[in-house]
Image (cartoon, rainbow, N blue to C red; front, side):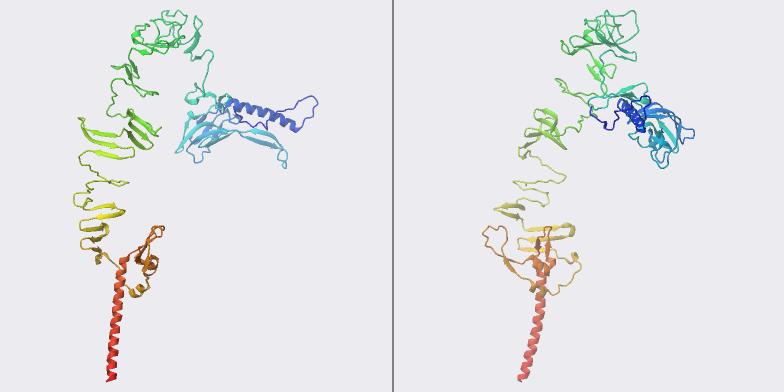
Length: 575
C-alpha cells in the first residue's frame, strides 16, 4: 500500500515517570500528543468514516426543526465524535434538498491570563451539526432532508455507518460495513472474499465433511423418511452439493464431480431418480451434450429445445448450421456505438457485407453491384473501379429529385439534357475545351440572365451584336454626366503585355487602361475583389465619351458662330 500519512510530525516519544520527578508543561503535552496520534491513526486506518451508534434524526412536532439524538461516529481523520446530549437543529438557510451531517470540533476554555493566548486550561470537544447540499470530507452524513412548504421529509436510507477498513498493497479501498437503514442486517464487502475453511451463511448453506473426508457445499433440509446418502451427508431436496461417486442413476439435479472436473445436470422427476434422456454433461472426459428441453425465464419450453424469456448476453461466436434467424416484424438487429472504426457489422460472405467507419455506413463487394426484382431478374448493374470509377449498365431513364454535384466533370457522348424545353446542354449548345481553349457553342443567341432582377446580357451571334439591359424601368437616381470631356482627357491609354508567364516570349501587345488610374476618375467603372485585384468595365466609357462629344460639338458650334461673326465684321471693314 502506498504511503498516504505524513509521519514527520508523529510523536514517537513519551515521558518516563518516576517518584520525585519534576515535570514540565511540555512533558504533559508530549504525553497527550503521543496518545492522540496513535488513537487517531488507528481509527483512521482501520475504520471507515461513519456512524457507530445512535445519532438518530427525528422531525419535531412543529415540522420546522429536527432532533438529533445522542450517539457517536468516526470521521475521515480518525476523530471520535461523541454527542452527549440531544440537540435541536433549525438552521436550514435556503436549502431545500440537502444532507444533515456532524463533524468534530474542539474549543479552548478557562483562560487564566487575558494577555496570554496559550493560557487556556481546558480543551472541550463540541461536535457541530450542519446542513448543506453535500457532506464535506470531514463530516459524517446523518440523513438526507427534503424541505417543501415548511415540511421536512427524512430519507434515512442515506445514513452513513462506520465499518472496518483493511489495509492492502495497492491502496484500493477494502472495507466491510453495514448497508445502512435500507438493509441493516446486510454486511457489504468491497473487494473479493477468499475462504480457506468452512462458511456458514444464515444457517442455510454450510461446508461440512462427508464420511470420506471430502468437503461438500449443500443446503440443509429436515430429514425426510430417513433419506440419507451412503457418505453420511443428508441428501438435499433437489438442491446443490458435490459427491465423490457418479452412478448412472439416482443423482441429484446438480452435481459437481471432485474428479474429472465435470458438471452434470439432471431434470428431477419421479422422486430422486435422474434420467440420461433429460441430463446434460459439461466438461470432463465426456463430450458436452444436452438431451432435454430447457426453458429459462419460463416454466415450459414448448416446442423449442431452448426457450429463453428476457435479455441474454453472449460473448463469442454463434454458428447456425441449418435453419433461419426469424424476427418479429417489429424487432431490430441493433449494434452499439462502440468500435465503429472500419468495422464490418454484417458479413454476408467473405469480403461482402455492411459496416461502419465512424459516421459513414458502407457496404463491401467485389466491384459488381446488382439490383434485382422479386423474380431475381436483374434491373440494374453497377460496376465500380479501384479509383472510384462507376459504370451503370442499364437502358432505362434515371431521374433525380434534388441536385446532382459532380467534382471532376461529366463525360457524355450524346450531351446532357436538363429538361425537355430546349433549356439544355447538348451538341447544339455545349461547353467544351479544345486545343487549350474553352468554347461555348450555341444555335444563334446566348442569354446570360439574372431572373431575380430582370437583367440579362444578350449575345446575338448571327448578327454579331451584344445587348445589355438598359430599360428605364430598371434604373433610378438618373443624372447627367458632368465634365465628361475633361474626365476623358485625364485618362491615359497604354499598350501592355500580360504577365501570364515571365519566362514566355510573348510579343502580342494589348491596348487599354490601368484600372487604378481609371478608378480615380471614374470609380463607378472599377471593382475591387477580396484579394485587392481590380477589374474594369470598358463599355462603361461609352456614356462619358458621348457626353464629351456633345460638349465638343457645343464648343464647335460656338466657335463657328464666332468665326462667322468675325468674317462678317471683316467684310464690313473692307467696305
